[in-house]
Length: 110
Image 1 (cartoon, one colour):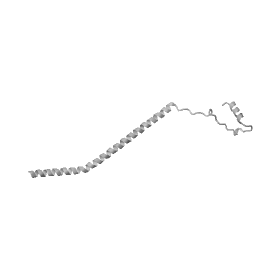
Image 2 (tube, helix red, strand yellow):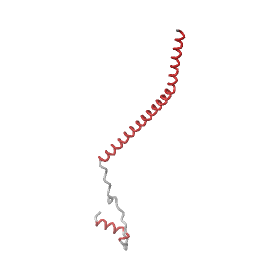
Image 3 (cartoon, helix red, strand yellow):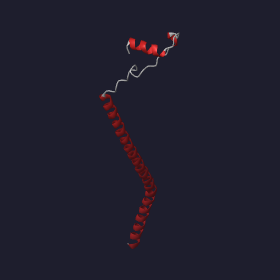
Image 4 (cartoon, one colour):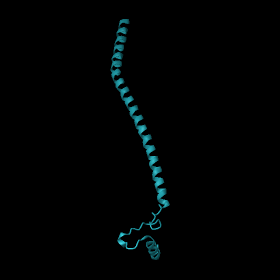
C-alpha cells in the first residue's frame, strides 16, 4: 500500500479525536509474505528417502523372518542332537551285546 492509500483508509475509518496509538491496522493478504515453495529437488529427495525407508523396512522384516526360521531349525537340530546322544550309548551297548552273543554262539557251535 502506498502512503496516500493508507491515509485515505485511515480517514474513512477513524473518528475525529482518535489517537494514533489507539489504532490497530489489520494486515491485508497482500501485506503478509508468502512462504517460498520447496524446491523440486527437495521434494524429490524426500520421495527418495521415503522409498528407501520403505525398502529397508521390507528388507528388515524379511531378515527377521529368516533369523526366526534359522533359530527354529537350530532348535530342532539341538533337540535331535540331544536325542541321538541319549540313544547312541544304548546302541553301542546293544551292538557289544550282539557281538558277545554272536561270539558265544560260534564257540558253542565249534
